[in-house]
Length: 492
Ligand SMILES: *[C@@H]1O[C@H](CO)[C@@H](O)[C@H](O)[C@H]1NC(C)=O
Ligand SMILES: *[C@@H]1O[C@H](CO)[C@@H](O)[C@H](O)[C@H]1NC(C)=O
Ligand SMILES: *[C@@H]1O[C@H](CO)[C@@H](O)[C@H](O)[C@H]1NC(C)=O
Image (cartoon, rainbow, N blue to C red; front, side, top):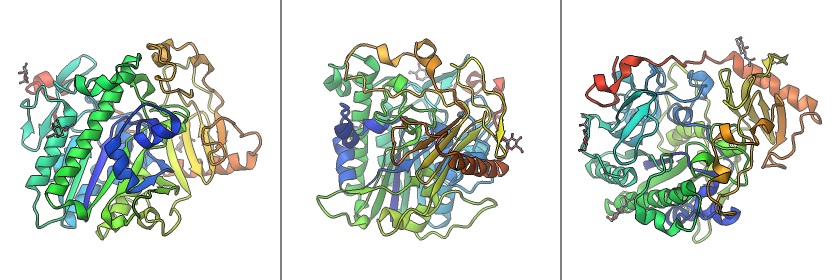
């Protein structure tokens, strides 16, 4: 089969139509809904809380502790990237005879040529290498350094200056579909810029949301609508090319919604950058004739699936034998799980262990405290069965309503540093929740279940023993785009 993987950026749990209806947000995605309703909705689906990490896990099938990307994101000025000793998904599919193409956001490192997408298994690439930029101009600043960021395997380009990226990437995805070698199955990875900040969208998309007083949310509504239309255009193009009937389309968010930039995860707690459910419980569904979903019913799949599982799952779907590289996968094959033939092949998810995590709004970090061999002052999280254990600081722990409810101007969406409530963010360094009974994380139960706490701390300690050191190098001023023709690109 052809595989089309669509990744939405900073797309909140409550920002897709079928969740919005259930949880009363005003976001509308008629096309995505139609795909999901004729597909399998993944409703116990987990992703990582932020961009580079989630993408690294998707591409490598491995947890962040095994690639050194535990902390934050790869910044444009860092000599950093998803380590080259990982055989990543497109490389693997390429070996199995797939024609592989990528459009959109890479964010897995570019300081050296070897890290670029077309050196890592994609036959063609069109997109941007950093983490976020202007939707029209492709201008991106990082600290004092600024440059354009749009490139393909032929080199950087300014030719698309002014084109809104949702439309641009839909067009480029369609071009990839056209130029794909018809004798081979297609792997197309479309990593949209939508719906990450900055809040930009052509007026016509935002117009229906004019009544929303919160500017970010209004714009976000339009950005979501543009993405919905972009997916529709790509789908119609696959149909016109005669590829659709043999295509498996996966749609996924990369992390939870950024509530400071229009996103919403209600009724989940927290947001992007946190290990609360709002940061990691993802929008996801699979569509394809092969799934044989009875019309007009839709299928909700409540099995625990993690973003690391796509690698082995896609290997299974494509009958592509996986050659374990030098490293072992953390993902597990969920192909039969998606069909509902079997229960999830996983019982637990390591959410992360990040010794460098210190959210801005805490005055002090907790003191080292080793329990069951694990330092509970360190930001970490693990899911095991119904339980979820969090240690260390956890960041924004609010339940944030869709801004359109109260429909006031900015109030609820202020920056953390100005939010009057943030001293109240939980500082308890060991927290336990029963996610099955308490999916919104309202009742902290570590005192009631000390043996569960100990078991999960021991598991974290065991994971930690397999971790590689965090790779988070300092900024390198020689990355300066003005030294390289005005574009962000490899400099070493
Ligand atoms: C979708 O296709 C239509 C028709 O070609 C075009 O007008 C529209 O701009 C496209 N939208 C996106 C988001 O690509
Ligand atoms: C993880 O293991 C390293 C190396 O043994 C140790 O220094 C560190 O404190 C451990 N981290 C936690 C959170 O326990
Ligand atoms: C890109 O195009 C814009 C608009 O024409 C122009 O202002 C800018 O200088 C160009 N940048 C580069 C690096 O060519």
